[in-house]
Length: 422
Image (cartoon, rainbow, N blue to C red):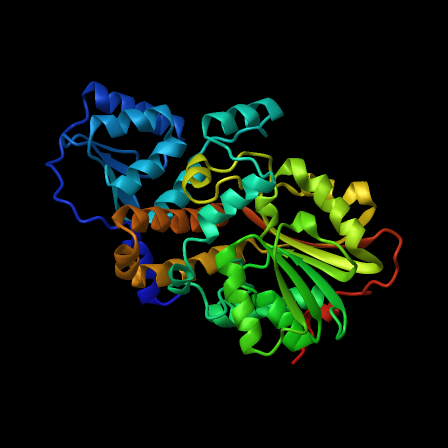
């Protein structure tokens, strides 16, 4: 990262306020704050209350948090996971300093927890407003996030509008280079050949489908329930003259039919819901030829836990990042064999750094499109996601699979790293 890039990230939470004069923390409010910090593992931070009372857990600290009202403090005490994001968005909590490092330190300091039981996950989902991924529910959830407007996403994504983890052949690669490398990485992993048919579940703005058609000679049928994304993808296909090789279907993955040589899902499984994994596996089984193979690319976790409550409420309603064990509910019932698993966690952290840098450069335009609370919400989401991937709270899994007992498989991984098809 360039020094300018790092400065942009450090400034991401740099709220400029006139702080009250600091004084010893002795009030009941300060004692409650100290208990909250202890419960969170005492991450390195300085917190200043509205009256100037200040608590520093240790020195040096990457940032100072300023809490501007007793009401904001009480909400943090009630549910810090949810209300820190709410308060940051509305400005009753501000952060001066390195927001990304502050959040990463918070992840590292958090006391270890056991995997959530099914009952605890259900209770957490109820308390935090979990949204189910039924046919109608999925439509509502996807609309909330992906139909914010193509103009918004165009401000900070790469030129091909890829909103999933990139693959950086080197740390110095540009975002555009890394996103193209990711598409090649996927195509090589499934050993895509000219003339083959690919089904894609959740196609975003169409970059993978168009890449597979133009660079690898495949025929692609891609499904998506986001109207904005489908309209954009169809226009790109028309502009490239690919209408006869790429079909963008505005429809749920559950409506897939026909047969394909390869099944690909890049960044959709997070929106499926654990209770639908067996159903997804049955759909893949129904469509995949006997010699077919597939790849699922998904944010995940090392242990089963609900999605962050604030992210679920404000950014990704209905989303859930699965463990590898949970993902096996897609493969095991249908007799699929897992051939390869790769974790691109640090690639996603770097992808997000590029997104956050571009977002910060475009923040005035975002503010004009929406409002200040929206600017702060998405800043926190991007910064928090960098922190989560860096700290290992989130993973990025690419899982390659085929039908059990099918022996036409690569002897080595050499095919993944051969020069890209052109």
